[in-house]
Length: 154
Image 1: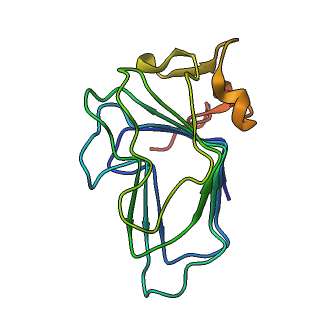
Image 2: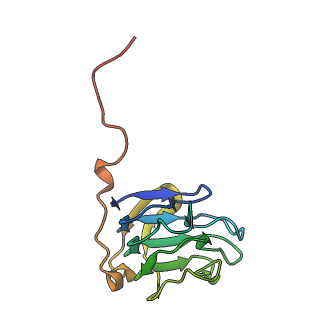
């Protein structure tokens, strides 16, 4: 289970590669300016063509600031149940829900999550957020990152 994470930029926020019974839910995937056809929020790829089953990707926010249409899901021979995710591009560009023939978000939602300051890394949801449409639960960013410590290692 991958839940309550905020992932910024990179080639992919996550990758499922031949796994089964994986659940990826209630995460924020900030793609920033990524828009290449082989780069997206996630890579779904089958390792051997038959070991992927019962993988679920739902109730995530996929956010972009790309000036051209970003590819959201990249798939190479894999499948997963993808539904009920929220998509938003701050530049008004469309979000491509799939790359490949076998991967679609069966219940895509579009709308502004109304983040406080995504460019500054603050993903607090605003009062008018569209995230309620997918049942997204706010993520407490106060507990994220490295824990403060008084111990020092030399």
